[in-house]
Length: 363
Image 1 (cartoon, rainbow, N blue to C red):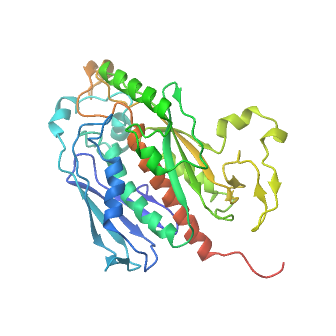
Image 2: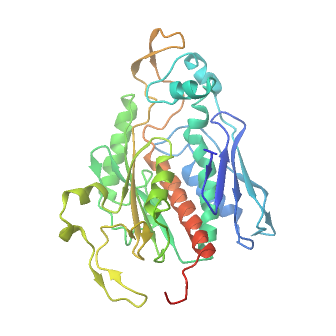
Image 3: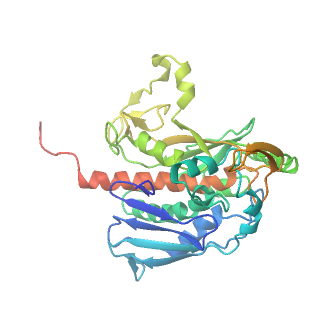
């Protein structure tokens, strides 16, 4: 069950880093949703390796829809997508299979299952996120049938370099204009230089991705354990290398007084409208009608070309240097993955709202 996400829209992903392919099965999709395979492929193109500042692994990531769609529309039956892997180099990991790499899931996986796939991290690899991005494109198609929602993520910080981005205005086109996927041109230049410098030094960098979802109606999400922010946090923290999550102003709000942190209301055509958005479009775990704002912190890539100390399967101390093809910074390719997880959560909550709409009777 740990490979399945969602309540009304249930996504199961499958596949390992160096297996023959990655894929997903999506259940709960309403019938009649228009699905464009080119949109799925375009989403995967933003995530795939081989781009500037990323891993040189070359995967075409062309999705193949195996079920659930006929003549371009969903059938209401499970939708399955297969993404073939063609450029795995398992030999890169042959000399590492007997040891436990620092920062990786090698030892915890061995402790949990007693058996693991050491090729590229197996199931813990970021290769799995290709399936999430494909599913996210489908989730966005579902959302288009419900509300005019825009989801845009961007790299907001790499190491110590932060960006200045207006979440009410930023577009995907602005994000995609630069390889680092930061719409702030000055910050983007500095980020790219820092990533290149870290790679040349055999090291890696972490940072933050921010995301906004504009156009989400008020009333999505449920207390207590179905809070929108809790589900977003679950989705984001399930991503490889994700180590932190913020809803709205997040940590910054812990330094304020309540009188400063609260978002005042003013009258609006469909109900109260907050004049600020420090809460990130959610109160009580339910959407307020303001843009949904979140941040996801990612640690530096664990594989680095520097000497590290660890132990092997026999418990003997070992020193090694990382090998294989890896991103010096996961952030540029994490952007479409973060968008996909937001789309998956919102689509699931939209269907939950349809299943249990508010009562129209007086109490």
